[in-house]
Image (cartoon, rainbow, N blue to C red; front, side, top):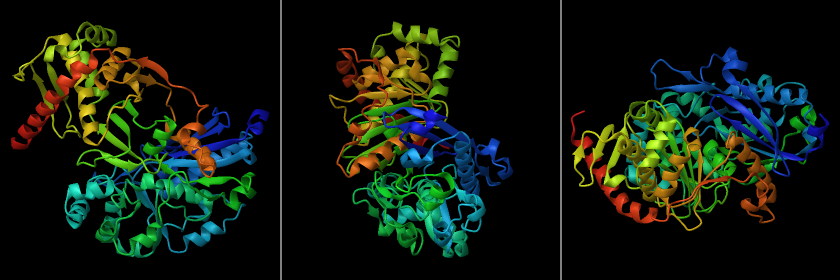
Length: 536
């Protein structure tokens, strides 16, 4: 264990839905230690499935807050047993599943500040929460509160301009409103409301950690331009809410030193700094080391786009968050449900279930697909909100089927054109220095990545992004240490692994897709309007 003992490092934590994970990253940006505690497996006494409890109504989804506390105890004990030298930790930061909330009971701050090093945390914090089961991002039980909030500020678009998103059931403001309306006694006995991220940071600080700008912009409560709570939104959700939330801070802020509890129980240095924790999506942006103008595309079960923006255009679709790396900039997030499962369906139907056949068909057709365009939404899509398959020939006439090669290219080109169109709808612009970072299962298919490069007119890179939220949190810890010296994030992480170039756009790609993109957008709009007119 001498190797563990010798390395000065930062820790990156991630309180995700199913587990708590940790990485240690040394000053050369190498990950040299990682571990995790799985809620279902390691903390079975809480009876969770996938880390949560789904309630009888099918809409309410919660997690036990003491399970999260006990997971930290277990992970620290595992590190101690492995001989991890906590005295070498310079700083720590972390991420939490976005939109979850923790309600601290009146008097909990005194308990946090006077923890005994002789006892694990979960034994001491048992009476510290006014709500034992916390609402998490999977909860969709607050539709009434969403409508109330939008009405209070002048509609969905007005709320989006103000907070970066229209009202969403999982967003924290609406969850707080539900608690206040349905459990006013618990609300009145709450002295602080944390996000999962700031709750976890509070455990390390021994006092209430502030909510950071980036995770705070996933609450429908923060004015994303002014970086302050919106009084209109606070008033629409619950009384005396501002004092229960505290003052938000930039994501790279050092919020204090680690609590004496960890110094005495585990041997942390009293100089170890706690850098503000953020949401898992912003932490992943840091972990993938995106820069201005860049895009990250996660090609998984759902496809997700992360965009770095300087001047966003909030809309009724997607989300605008404050950027975790440069507080004056923004990040956008777009999610598309018909991702890999849709690609696999078309592969099974038109390429005999073979990816190599699929790739061969993709490579045998030309960019632009002869003007044929396709929309493939076998499940109700998020962006746009429609379902069904639609195919159009070069004259914009709807047709029932394409030849198999045309079908395959229509799917892939359509998926990436939709992503570009909706990204530009949020204010994204492809810059000369733009690079695309592709992750997820489909990022291993070079032919798919070639279409991505062609449609966006930018080079595509790949990298190992396992534990990107954890690694990004460790990078944020290093960044927090450097912020006082005005060293930019990109300089702090310059020794980190370099992404590999996977595809560059063909010379004629820009010309082809400049003609196709407006057609695709127009046809998509027509499909949306047709769906709106159809009887439900």
